[in-house]
Length: 281
Figure (tube, rainbow, N blue to C red):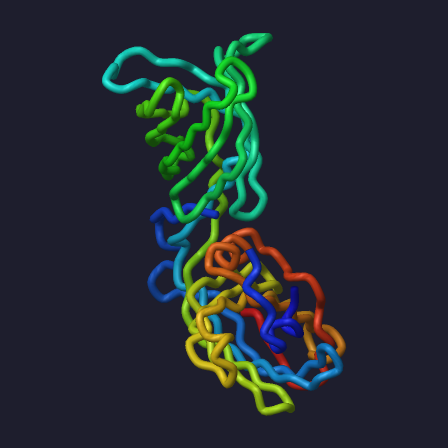
Protein backbone atom coordinates (compact mmCIF):
# COMPACT_ATOMS: atom_id res chain seq x y z
CA UNK A 1 0.00 0.00 0.00
CA UNK A 2 1.34 3.46 -0.83
CA UNK A 3 0.70 7.14 -0.17
CA UNK A 4 -1.70 7.04 -3.10
CA UNK A 5 -3.84 4.74 -0.96
CA UNK A 6 -3.26 6.93 2.07
CA UNK A 7 -5.01 9.74 0.26
CA UNK A 8 -8.08 7.73 -0.56
CA UNK A 9 -8.36 6.61 3.04
CA UNK A 10 -7.17 3.01 2.71
CA UNK A 11 -7.65 0.79 5.73
CA UNK A 12 -4.84 0.49 8.21
CA UNK A 13 -2.69 -2.51 7.28
CA UNK A 14 -2.01 -5.22 9.57
CA UNK A 15 6.68 -6.52 16.33
CA UNK A 16 8.30 -5.84 18.35
CA UNK A 17 10.47 -5.14 21.21
CA UNK A 18 11.33 -1.78 22.83
CA UNK A 19 14.61 -1.75 24.80
CA UNK A 20 16.84 1.03 26.05
CA UNK A 21 20.41 1.13 24.74
CA UNK A 22 23.23 3.65 24.73
CA UNK A 23 22.40 6.97 23.01
CA UNK A 24 23.95 7.19 19.56
CA UNK A 25 25.05 10.80 19.48
CA UNK A 26 27.82 12.37 21.48
CA UNK A 27 27.43 15.91 22.78
CA UNK A 28 27.99 18.44 20.03
CA UNK A 29 27.50 15.97 17.20
CA UNK A 30 24.70 16.84 14.78
CA UNK A 31 21.92 14.26 14.76
CA UNK A 32 21.22 12.55 11.42
CA UNK A 33 18.06 13.83 9.79
CA UNK A 34 16.08 14.20 6.60
CA UNK A 35 14.31 17.35 5.48
CA UNK A 36 12.46 18.35 2.39
CA UNK A 37 9.49 19.62 0.50
CA UNK A 38 8.60 17.79 -2.70
CA UNK A 39 5.76 17.71 -5.16
CA UNK A 40 4.90 14.31 -6.59
CA UNK A 41 2.20 12.46 -8.46
CA UNK A 42 0.36 9.32 -7.40
CA UNK A 43 -2.83 7.91 -8.84
CA UNK A 44 -2.93 10.75 -11.35
CA UNK A 45 -3.18 13.32 -8.55
CA UNK A 46 -0.66 16.06 -7.79
CA UNK A 47 0.45 15.95 -4.15
CA UNK A 48 2.94 17.66 -1.85
CA UNK A 49 4.92 16.42 1.16
CA UNK A 50 6.90 18.59 3.55
CA UNK A 51 8.90 16.99 6.36
CA UNK A 52 11.59 17.39 8.98
CA UNK A 53 12.58 14.10 10.65
CA UNK A 54 15.47 14.01 13.12
CA UNK A 55 17.03 10.85 14.57
CA UNK A 56 17.44 11.53 18.28
CA UNK A 57 19.06 8.37 19.68
CA UNK A 58 19.23 4.61 19.31
CA UNK A 59 16.72 3.94 22.05
CA UNK A 60 14.45 1.37 20.46
CA UNK A 61 14.92 -2.13 19.16
CA UNK A 62 12.59 -4.77 17.82
CA UNK A 63 12.54 -8.55 17.98
CA UNK A 64 11.77 -11.22 15.42
CA UNK A 65 11.03 -14.52 17.17
CA UNK A 66 11.62 -16.62 14.04
CA UNK A 67 13.80 -19.55 15.03
CA UNK A 68 14.16 -22.86 16.83
CA UNK A 69 13.68 -22.97 20.59
CA UNK A 70 13.58 -25.36 23.51
CA UNK A 71 10.85 -24.22 25.89
CA UNK A 72 10.66 -25.60 29.43
CA UNK A 73 7.10 -25.83 30.76
CA UNK A 74 6.24 -26.11 34.44
CA UNK A 75 2.82 -27.24 35.70
CA UNK A 76 1.37 -25.44 38.72
CA UNK A 77 1.88 -25.89 41.63
CA UNK A 78 5.14 -27.78 40.90
CA UNK A 79 7.90 -25.17 40.50
CA UNK A 80 10.71 -27.71 39.95
CA UNK A 81 9.76 -30.30 37.31
CA UNK A 82 10.14 -29.15 33.71
CA UNK A 83 8.68 -30.51 30.48
CA UNK A 84 10.95 -29.42 27.61
CA UNK A 85 9.29 -28.90 24.23
CA UNK A 86 10.86 -28.11 20.88
CA UNK A 87 9.30 -25.04 19.28
CA UNK A 88 9.71 -23.87 15.69
CA UNK A 89 8.49 -20.29 15.28
CA UNK A 90 8.08 -18.05 12.24
CA UNK A 91 7.21 -14.37 12.23
CA UNK A 92 5.89 -12.15 9.44
CA UNK A 93 5.35 -8.57 10.55
CA UNK A 94 3.67 -8.97 13.93
CA UNK A 95 2.08 -12.37 13.16
CA UNK A 96 3.60 -15.56 14.56
CA UNK A 97 3.09 -19.15 13.45
CA UNK A 98 4.78 -22.49 13.98
CA UNK A 99 4.61 -25.82 15.74
CA UNK A 100 6.29 -27.86 18.44
CA UNK A 101 6.34 -31.02 20.49
CA UNK A 102 7.41 -32.96 23.57
CA UNK A 103 9.98 -34.40 24.35
CA UNK A 104 12.51 -31.85 23.04
CA UNK A 105 15.10 -33.50 20.83
CA UNK A 106 13.07 -36.68 20.29
CA UNK A 107 12.82 -38.18 16.82
CA UNK A 108 9.12 -38.76 17.40
CA UNK A 109 7.09 -36.55 19.74
CA UNK A 110 4.59 -38.07 22.15
CA UNK A 111 2.77 -34.71 22.16
CA UNK A 112 2.65 -32.29 19.22
CA UNK A 113 0.96 -28.89 18.84
CA UNK A 114 0.29 -26.41 16.05
CA UNK A 115 -0.06 -22.64 16.48
CA UNK A 116 -3.42 -21.31 15.30
CA UNK A 117 -2.81 -17.61 15.99
CA UNK A 118 0.16 -15.68 17.32
CA UNK A 119 1.24 -12.08 17.67
CA UNK A 120 4.15 -9.98 18.89
CA UNK A 121 3.11 -6.58 20.24
CA UNK A 122 5.78 -4.47 21.85
CA UNK A 123 7.71 -6.91 24.04
CA UNK A 124 4.73 -9.25 24.49
CA UNK A 125 4.17 -12.52 22.65
CA UNK A 126 0.76 -14.25 22.54
CA UNK A 127 0.24 -17.75 21.12
CA UNK A 128 -2.85 -19.94 20.78
CA UNK A 129 -2.46 -23.54 19.63
CA UNK A 130 -4.06 -26.96 19.56
CA UNK A 131 -2.57 -30.41 20.07
CA UNK A 132 -2.42 -32.71 17.05
CA UNK A 133 -0.78 -35.71 18.74
CA UNK A 134 -1.04 -37.09 22.28
CA UNK A 135 -3.74 -34.73 23.56
CA UNK A 136 -5.99 -34.23 20.56
CA UNK A 137 -8.78 -31.79 21.40
CA UNK A 138 -6.65 -29.85 23.88
CA UNK A 139 -6.06 -26.16 23.28
CA UNK A 140 -3.39 -24.06 24.94
CA UNK A 141 -2.59 -20.37 25.19
CA UNK A 142 0.79 -18.87 26.00
CA UNK A 143 1.44 -15.25 27.03
CA UNK A 144 4.99 -14.08 27.51
CA UNK A 145 7.61 -11.39 27.48
CA UNK A 146 10.54 -10.96 25.11
CA UNK A 147 13.54 -9.88 27.16
CA UNK A 148 16.22 -7.48 25.83
CA UNK A 149 18.56 -10.47 25.34
CA UNK A 150 15.94 -12.22 23.17
CA UNK A 151 14.93 -14.88 25.69
CA UNK A 152 11.24 -15.68 26.11
CA UNK A 153 9.21 -16.45 29.24
CA UNK A 154 5.65 -16.30 30.51
CA UNK A 155 2.58 -18.23 31.59
CA UNK A 156 0.36 -20.83 29.94
CA UNK A 157 -3.06 -22.40 30.35
CA UNK A 158 -4.77 -25.37 28.68
CA UNK A 159 -7.91 -27.50 29.00
CA UNK A 160 -6.36 -30.97 29.30
CA UNK A 161 -8.59 -32.79 31.80
CA UNK A 162 -9.83 -29.44 33.06
CA UNK A 163 -8.15 -26.08 33.35
CA UNK A 164 -4.41 -26.27 33.97
CA UNK A 165 -1.90 -23.42 34.37
CA UNK A 166 1.82 -23.01 34.61
CA UNK A 167 4.91 -21.11 33.53
CA UNK A 168 7.26 -21.43 30.59
CA UNK A 169 10.70 -20.14 29.58
CA UNK A 170 13.03 -20.63 26.65
CA UNK A 171 16.21 -22.51 27.53
CA UNK A 172 17.59 -22.55 24.00
CA UNK A 173 17.08 -20.12 21.14
CA UNK A 174 16.65 -16.35 21.17
CA UNK A 175 14.63 -13.76 19.34
CA UNK A 176 16.68 -11.61 16.98
CA UNK A 177 16.95 -8.01 18.18
CA UNK A 178 16.75 -5.53 15.31
CA UNK A 179 18.12 -2.05 15.90
CA UNK A 180 16.07 1.06 15.23
CA UNK A 181 16.00 4.55 16.63
CA UNK A 182 13.65 7.13 18.04
CA UNK A 183 13.19 10.52 16.46
CA UNK A 184 11.20 13.70 16.30
CA UNK A 185 9.80 16.07 13.71
CA UNK A 186 6.79 16.73 11.54
CA UNK A 187 5.28 15.52 8.29
CA UNK A 188 2.70 17.51 6.31
CA UNK A 189 0.74 16.19 3.33
CA UNK A 190 -1.52 18.11 0.97
CA UNK A 191 -2.96 17.58 -2.49
CA UNK A 192 -4.59 19.48 -5.31
CA UNK A 193 -8.05 18.45 -4.08
CA UNK A 194 -7.52 20.36 -0.87
CA UNK A 195 -7.05 17.36 1.40
CA UNK A 196 -4.27 17.41 3.99
CA UNK A 197 -2.92 15.88 7.20
CA UNK A 198 -0.20 16.47 9.80
CA UNK A 199 1.82 13.73 11.49
CA UNK A 200 3.98 13.84 14.60
CA UNK A 201 7.21 12.00 13.70
CA UNK A 202 8.37 9.64 16.46
CA UNK A 203 10.68 7.13 14.78
CA UNK A 204 13.61 7.94 12.47
CA UNK A 205 16.40 5.79 11.05
CA UNK A 206 19.03 7.44 8.84
CA UNK A 207 21.48 5.30 6.85
CA UNK A 208 23.78 7.20 4.52
CA UNK A 209 21.68 8.69 1.72
CA UNK A 210 18.56 6.79 2.83
CA UNK A 211 16.17 7.70 5.64
CA UNK A 212 13.14 6.00 7.12
CA UNK A 213 10.67 7.66 9.46
CA UNK A 214 7.16 7.27 10.87
CA UNK A 215 4.66 9.41 12.71
CA UNK A 216 1.16 9.46 14.10
CA UNK A 217 -1.45 11.44 12.13
CA UNK A 218 -2.82 13.97 14.61
CA UNK A 219 -5.00 16.18 12.40
CA UNK A 220 -6.43 15.84 8.91
CA UNK A 221 -9.07 17.06 6.50
CA UNK A 222 -10.50 13.53 6.52
CA UNK A 223 -11.36 12.39 10.09
CA UNK A 224 -10.74 8.73 9.17
CA UNK A 225 -7.05 9.48 8.61
CA UNK A 226 -6.50 10.64 12.21
CA UNK A 227 -4.92 7.93 14.36
CA UNK A 228 -3.20 6.20 11.45
CA UNK A 229 0.56 6.02 11.25
CA UNK A 230 2.38 7.22 8.15
CA UNK A 231 5.68 5.52 7.35
CA UNK A 232 7.95 7.13 4.76
CA UNK A 233 11.24 6.21 3.11
CA UNK A 234 13.35 8.70 1.14
CA UNK A 235 16.52 8.51 -0.94
CA UNK A 236 18.74 11.54 -1.55
CA UNK A 237 20.44 11.10 -4.90
CA UNK A 238 21.66 14.69 -5.24
CA UNK A 239 20.40 17.46 -7.48
CA UNK A 240 17.94 18.07 -9.06
CA UNK A 241 15.53 16.15 -6.88
CA UNK A 242 12.99 15.35 -9.58
CA UNK A 243 15.63 13.42 -11.52
CA UNK A 244 17.52 11.57 -8.77
CA UNK A 245 15.62 11.58 -5.45
CA UNK A 246 12.96 9.07 -4.38
CA UNK A 247 10.10 8.88 -1.87
CA UNK A 248 7.81 6.06 -0.73
CA UNK A 249 5.03 5.95 1.86
CA UNK A 250 2.16 4.03 3.46
CA UNK A 251 -0.57 4.38 6.05
CA UNK A 252 -0.17 1.58 8.59
CA UNK A 253 -0.39 0.72 12.30
CA UNK A 254 2.14 1.68 14.97
CA UNK A 255 3.86 -1.72 15.27
CA UNK A 256 4.33 -2.10 11.52
CA UNK A 257 5.57 1.48 11.25
CA UNK A 258 8.16 0.98 13.99
CA UNK A 259 9.21 -2.37 12.52
CA UNK A 260 9.61 -0.92 9.02
CA UNK A 261 11.67 2.02 10.27
CA UNK A 262 13.92 -0.26 12.33
CA UNK A 263 14.42 -2.65 9.42
CA UNK A 264 14.79 0.02 6.72
CA UNK A 265 11.77 -1.16 4.75
CA UNK A 266 10.77 0.81 1.67
CA UNK A 267 6.98 0.70 1.19
CA UNK A 268 5.72 -0.60 -2.13
CA UNK A 269 5.32 1.93 -4.90
CA UNK A 270 7.83 4.70 -5.50
CA UNK A 271 6.27 8.09 -6.25
CA UNK A 272 7.28 10.34 -9.14
CA UNK A 273 8.85 13.54 -7.75
CA UNK A 274 7.94 16.52 -9.92
CA UNK A 275 9.33 19.48 -7.96
CA UNK A 276 11.11 20.60 -4.81
CA UNK A 277 14.01 18.96 -3.04
CA UNK A 278 14.82 16.59 -0.19
CA UNK A 279 18.03 15.98 1.72
CA UNK A 280 19.40 13.27 4.00
CA UNK A 281 22.17 14.59 6.20
